[in-house]
Length: 470
Image 1 (tube, rainbow, N blue to C red):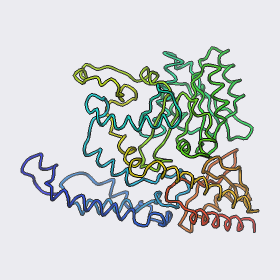
Image 2 (image 1 turned 180 degrees about the vertical axis):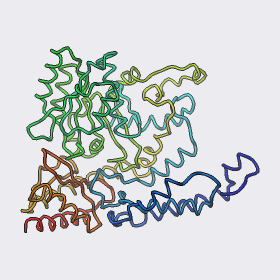
Image 3 (image 1 turned 30 degrees about the horizontal axis):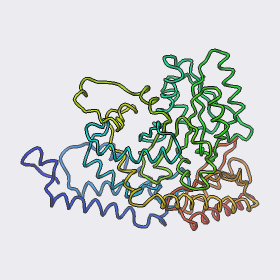
Image 4 (image 1 turned 90 degrees about the horizontal axis):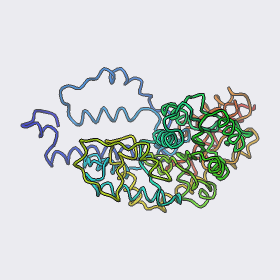
């Protein structure tokens, strides 16, 4: 694609035969990335540090050939942990479904504007249809609205802004929120961005250290009301990042209704287990939420950048985000279709709906349900195997698909065990801190993770635990 062009347009729009060659070469790169993903090692690749100086110094200039450009891309993507493999058990893994990536290519090429429905109503309707499926999945009322955002952080922020504007309009300095010790860091960040004083973010301890304690929340809210503050939201977790634990959703929902406080459930990791029978039973009470954060790029296996927020009453989103502009007056009002710019912080947005819609249409919902059931089975298997190991202390039975444990010994022993597991290269675990102690964790979520990889991880961990005990 290098070289001069006859017209400015020709510099950017290649002729059909050249476009076919471009797509063919790009598809070969994608095919190489996908080849053997399930069994490929995750640890041991070059870090990429050797490329950093050259990449930082690189500046756009004269055009280069596609082969040269793709060679640079190939060099970059062959560095760092290969987190799309079946061995990624460290951080809640994104599988990166290729069908969603294809949808993203199509959406970006079509480049339809979807911030206001009057511009491209059919594209908005396609997205609105799959969003309605999300609200129905969680048994929310007809007033509910789902929106797609960049991820759980943006969803948590949008939820807290809506809660602030409903329960503390014009007085964010008096607003208070209530979270557990295991709440995701994005909730505290969202509160700060929303203008809530960090001192008014109540991080409440619990007897187990894992679940938000309902009575502690009740006492804190009543004290804040007595002090003239404005409690705006209880934030529960439906699958914490540290341990996958689910807060007592029914009790917290009842408390929120009783005290007139917004009830937000951060289900970024765990929400889509609602598709399964076991997950629905464990997530009972989530249907009572005023808002729910979901991450399709976690438990629907999509690429990064696909988050969702579900809100019980779309008018709460309009109150928080709607804004008129004279330069938009020519666009028609489509009535029944949502104007996403009036429901989110964004006026310009990509057509996110297609990368959620296409995988669901091509694979079918049952395929996702089966994959999530498989992850619950694998987590239960890992828990049983580790629980039988005398050199391992398992913290608790997993609520979903994250297993937390310690090898016998001090905190340094956990770090040594983790290093020993990673020397094999085929699996990657991670550590965190729970109750003031370094704790190891195994997050089983990638659609490419199978029984063999989980059993391998347990064997490696058991060997490392035995070495620490000897």
